[in-house]
Length: 247
Image (cartoon, rainbow, N blue to C red; front, side, top):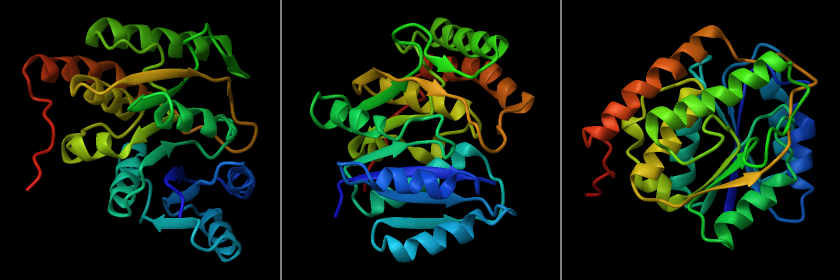
């Protein structure tokens, strides 16, 4: 039994899914993998189910009826992981924009170095992004600066989607009150953990844009992040971010 679970949401990732799963399982540190599959028409789920026979007890799939948003996919995975008592839970993309070998570094940041939340950060040591057009690099970089200015969150890469969480953090955050479903979800989760007093640490990574498949970014997701941050700050100022109360 591994103490660590990697959650990978998928929609039309047939070009990447087998390679990413095999790469994770070839790491020296043992991780389990949970695929949150949103009814991809390209057959992504069929590939995962075939691989589950090869990796029994290590690879799992949760299938949903359609595209319900990145945030809801991760929350589904968080609840699944809590029920099965994984100590460390890591968010990762399916498209190799996050290097699977960095999973071990994020894990060590929490397991060995005392972080409650470890963020694979593109901006903690400059701008470490490969294959993005300059316009998108600038948009992402200044979006994080905007989030820091509004929320006072001391994180350089607030929209990062490569994150390791200790189970106690996910058990303390009231997941029912996480509102955002796009990339603003990543901001909301980090801000909530920080407001609840958890130690958040950034680990430098190199982010490489996908070479296979299609990006899921769109204007609706971007607007949610821009305007949602203001609402998030007000919730924090008004004391509405509280830990979950266990029965």
